[in-house]
Length: 119
Image (cartoon, rainbow, N blue to C red):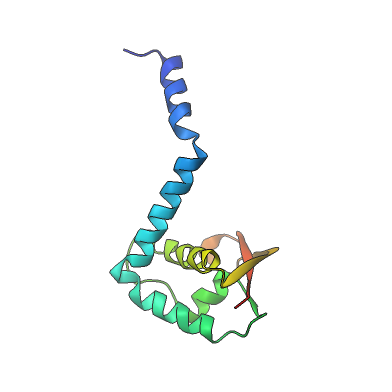
């Protein structure tokens, strides 16, 4: 049986791996984007995006105001982050460097990144 010190060491070793963390993030976001229950959200979010002009700024709150959230799933808010992440990776949007307080009550006044449409 491992000592408490050894178990803590093992946990830390597996818990702190930036490469693995990025891999898990990308894998999870891909799963969320491909989830059938998110189809309506993804479609509405695309309509929101194509309604913007190059140079327009927005936050995830704006996307949710327009597109709503997927109808099901405990982590349905993750669909918004996955959509934003996909748009940023595709270089359609860039972070302005500005943080804006969320107006959504269930976000508890947390910070949202402000994004700009670049193409």
